[in-house]
Amino acid sequence: MHPACRVVGVGSDMLKITSIVGICWLAFGCQSQTNSEELVMWVAGREGEVVSAVLPEFEASHPGLHVHVQQLPWRSAHEKFLTAAVARRAPDVAQLGNTWIPEFATIAALEPLDDELAASPGLAPDDYFPGAWGANECAGHMYGVPWYVDTRLLFYRTDLLQAAGFERAPRTWDEWLTMLRAIQLRASQQKGQGPQPAALFLRLDEPELLLALGLQQEPLLRDGDRYGNFQSPGFRRALDFYVSLARVALTDGEASSQIANLWDEFGRGSFTSFISGPWQLGELARRLPAELQGSWSTAQLPGRDGPGASLALGASLVVFAGSKHKAAAWQLIEYLSRPDVQRRFYDLTGDLPPRRSSWEGSELASERGAAAFRAQLEQLRPTPAVPEWQRISSTVTVIEERAARGALAPAAAAVELDRRTDRILEKRRWILQRGAAPVGASE
Image (cartoon, rainbow, N blue to C red; front, side, top):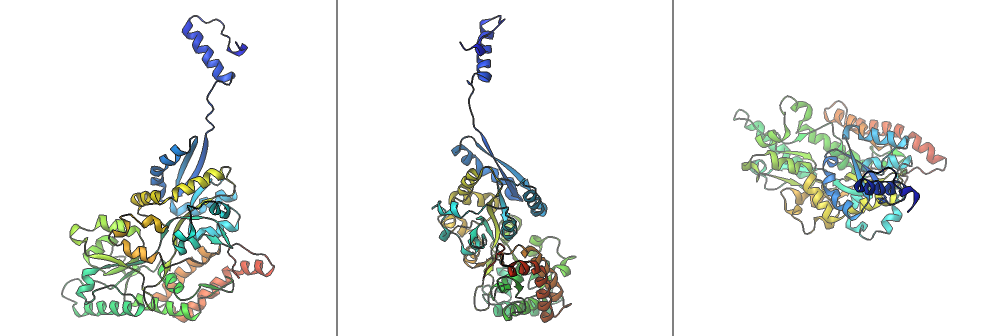
């Protein structure tokens, strides 16, 4: 017997056996080696609440690997990610908003995934909606894999449009404006005959609609993303059209005392349409009464000559550069990217899958309102892949509201957008002029 397994002063056979086993377990190498590995994953919003429901299968197929999920609130997620990246305390794998990827890639916080994607035939780029895939590419490298896709399109009351003489949703800018003006005129003519619906409920504190209309026309930045492109003829057309929409719409400021709940007021017929994202599919299905479930639908965002492009938003899965478990992190991304797992994730969250194969053979495309989203996903445009985009987007929000409310003429608004954007991009130009190539640079 090994000396470490000898027992001294044991009063019974049972204690002797127990002591022998215990000592061997600790000192003689008789214990089981688990070789466990913990993978830390940060997820924001509701996704953080439900992602654990799809992880047991992954952990069962990867013995010894445990995924520790930490949920973050969306409001503070960007700051927490940035602080963790700078302090080198970032998670192994995380959900990152698409528009944040260029910023985190610029500070070398993210691991490029080109080699992993090349070795993973199950993640074919052609299976992803191009706009969603393109939102993860910076300076020729892939820094994320689309997890779910978000965009904006038109929600409308079919019965209210029909009452105004329209059998379908608008497909072009001209049709859209004609329809809204007709609804506005009808409401004014029937004033005194009971509440009449506004043509459109429009939030002026969200830049997505104007940016989508602009991207339908031209890039939002020019000269290798060095300068703003808001005075271009294309964006000026989009801005003029947006201001025209605001003039016939019920805007958020005007509605603050009238609309306490978007879904209730949509059901009451306070407005015929609004612009929003895919989470509204589930909300309307839950919140509208049964008798109105057949009275609403969705449509692609109108364009100048037909259904137009919208924004490629959503979130992607990334691996942080400081991770000590990069191989395991990639295995988790591969698992969460499987079409069957994405369909289960949609059932839990309502987040739209970014892969065409995830839609095929499922009931998703046949759900009320989902068909327009499926069509819209084929026409997505990513926002500029520059780390300064969040600041530029916030600037658009400020200026678009002033223009929509008549405080700033559209021409002056375009000049101001370019002036502020050029100032934000000043450091970028300085770096490029010295021969460096910041992430997101496109020649």
